[in-house]
Length: 363
Image 1 (tube, rainbow, N blue to C red):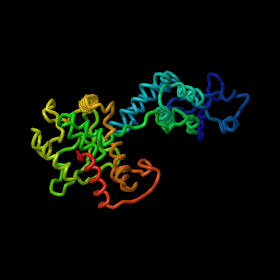
Image 2: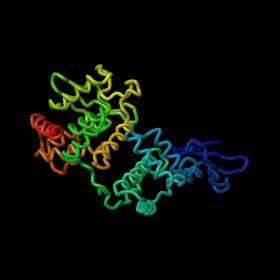
Image 3: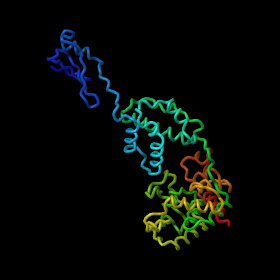
Image 4: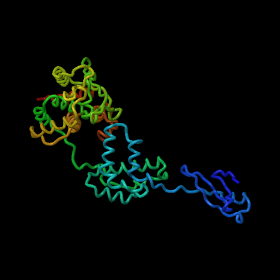
């Protein structure tokens, strides 16, 4: 005999002469003995004994390690933008998984995590990125039902001086940039001028096509990026913008267009001959040439992002307001540029940009 109940079914086991309560838990049928026929002579009495009774699901063990959760996160939740996904994978595979990969999700506690982060030989800012990666994994575990929905324990983990840099970003003086440009071979010299005159990220610069240049109106569209030779979207929606090109820089681009064998509208501006123009020069190729020229010119070590920092410094030096700087740097939040607010008109942006270009070409 069987009696339906809102949280399960009541069954009388004739062989054992006992009442059993049946439930489906995590896709499997579970049963629990309620009592004998002598204890509960009627169905009603046995049903009353089941009120509020619910079998607690067993704590998952298989598939509940940090390693298996991370593998599922990479498939289902990793950001689609390649550069962001690459950074996330770096934090996961270089730091989180070696230390916590074999641990159960429930064993990731705030104090051990904080002590572990403290012992890592990383900058405070990098430690905060690793912490945030763990935070995302715990959130994902709750989303998937692997953990109960509650306060994320990583909220309690603190990283001291998380926003403090160990090394100050490198910016070049006008004299240093001119020395560097003298030692750069083409098209890397043109790449340097485009980056420093617009503050472009190297992924945006290498992804430029000739169709992005409006020669008549002297503008340049920033439409895409390229990461690990894969075409990607720009970092933020504010990064997608049409910029004014000063005459000096436009002349440099015209000279390069006449020089390169890849000059049709759909060609990459900095197409690589090694790839027969199908792809632009790689980040690694640009970085190596930059290091060679930096050493030869005596400028010292610098990265491709130094041009973006230089652009911001030069905007300051020509007296550009913060509001104009935000728009020229294409930051979505002015706090990224500087912790004040402001506004700007397109005429102010053009004037400020032309001043920076004159610094680059002042030699």
